[in-house]
Image 1 (cartoon, rainbow, N blue to C red):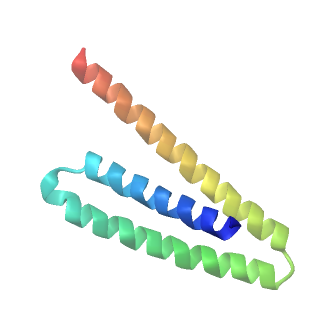
Image 2 (tube, rainbow, N blue to C red; image 1 turned 180 degrees about the vertical axis):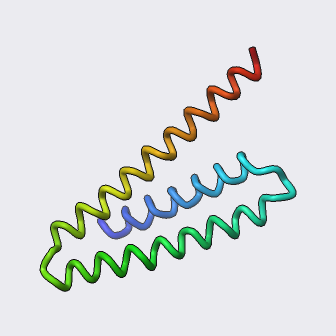
Image 3 (cartoon, one colour; image 1 turned 30 degrees about the vertical axis):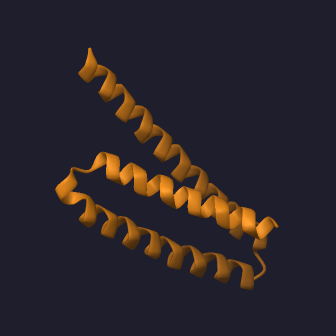
Length: 95
């Protein structure tokens, strides 16, 4: 059950990221933006798998988890900052 919750959360995150890309990009650039998004996700997956695997293999499981959690938290903070910035720009445009 736990693994299904993780997969569900991951799929939800991917849909949210795609939705954000669709909202931020003009219609004629959306396919290019989705391509860049997919490429960035793939590179991030490979890099994270390599460093977490390397650290875990060498007995640093706690450090591997903390680094992965830290990068995840930084990504969430960055997305929240971008969302807040976009909302403030929308409010300025309305006023």
